[in-house]
Length: 314
Image 1 (spheres, one colour):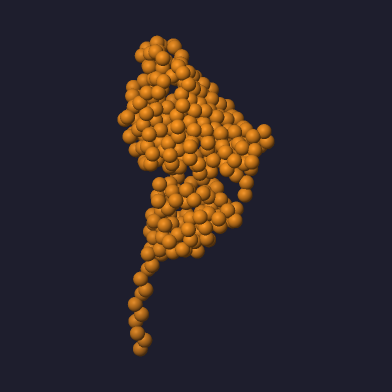
Image 2 (cartoon, rainbow, N blue to C red):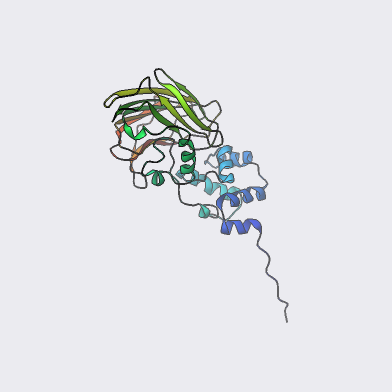
């Protein structure tokens, strides 16, 4: 009679690929491969699905996970590079989290939980507790013009913003401005043009979140308008940018978004999108930015988002 053969214990990597979470399984697969993130990045570039080492590190640490089409395509290449079964890592991805860089919200306003699930909502709640948000719902944004400048490597370098507000009742003496990056990193430098002045500012160096009070030169009366003009500049390189978005919790007036590409780093395709938060948003292709920039205009008649998305060649 043959002897019973005891089942072989499952390897830690195989168990994580079966149970997750995604970040732990990816970290184990990277360790098992013996490859550094730099070598993995080079192989991803050769496969035509480039991802920065910073992004790979964020995926591995669990801070972020792939969600956009280009990132999911890179994940397919990554599974091959790490010699794990096709689809093993992508099967561990949780629900997609909304991505956006810009917002004008009050932490206690209705709808925040639907627009920003955890952990983004937790980051914002912490930030908004550090500033005075009592006038946020008393200001209506009549117009907004935002310009994103990218460097020769396709990375976010500078953002300029001008917004026009109208007071819906007497009293507002400040507006709240918030910057929520797609990827964690250093907080950008904030520069304001007079007559607006800088009030309380919350900065989170771990996540890159910045929330600031922009003080008007005087309290507004109902019907008065105020303009703020500011610039954010990144001193340290950022990962590749692929999207420029406004999230708006209340209806707003005209919005103009402009993206300026370096002549050495032009995208393959550019699309505009907008509408309520969630799937099924309207999207349309824009002209190729042969002159180095594209812009899109729209009006946010209901809570939602409005933005520009692009794909890099390769």
